[in-house]
Amino acid sequence: MKNVCFQSLNGMTSLVLGIAVLLSTCFCSVMNAQSAPTNAPANLQLATFGGGCFWCAEAVFQRIPGVKSVVSGFAGGKTPNPSYEQVCTGDTGHAEVIQIKFDPSVLTYEKLLEIFWEAHDPTTLNRQGADVGTQYRSIILYSDDAQKAVAEKSKAEAAKHFSSPIVTQIVPLTKFYSAEDYHQNYYNQHSNQGYCQFVIGPKLRKLIEKGVIPQDK
Image 1 (spheres, rainbow, N blue to C red):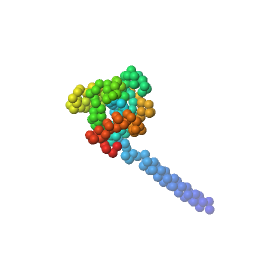
Image 2 (cartoon, rainbow, N blue to C red):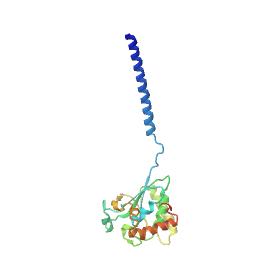
Image 3 (cartoon, one colour):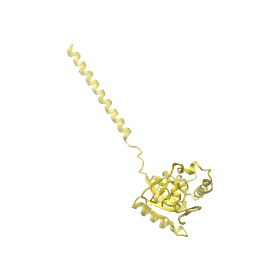
């Protein structure tokens, strides 16, 4: 009787161990399936431009396919972590700029630069329309030597299409400071505001007519 019980116990133990191994194998398979990348996103890149009021520039580039985000901010100066009010004095050395995060598999840096030249007047020094001051200067801040080379080539090509010399600065990006929250996504949240109606809105419509911005965005 003891032998029968012992044999039964051995059989039961083998069964339990078998089930445990099977469950462990299934669990590992599920975990591997969950962790394996299926559609791994492309590495996003950054571009930093200044072309007058950052509300305008932000509204333009938010509407370009391949752009993942646009942040309004300040760069090109020496004052650390400046406020909007400080930048408006012209004493910080900073320009109003936007930093664009984009998918290079959809949108190239070269194409962003083409849009940049279309979206503002790069021939007016420290001015865009009624906005006057060094903070409104035309500027490209490159992240590496590759961006620098592309920017210089693009500027030379764009110069052929303007009757006056391009005054856009091409300088290394040392530090980007995000502007206050109320400046972010400004046009989309304040399209009825006067500046948005009379400056940004017409600019967007003009760029849509030229095919720079898609109609459906």
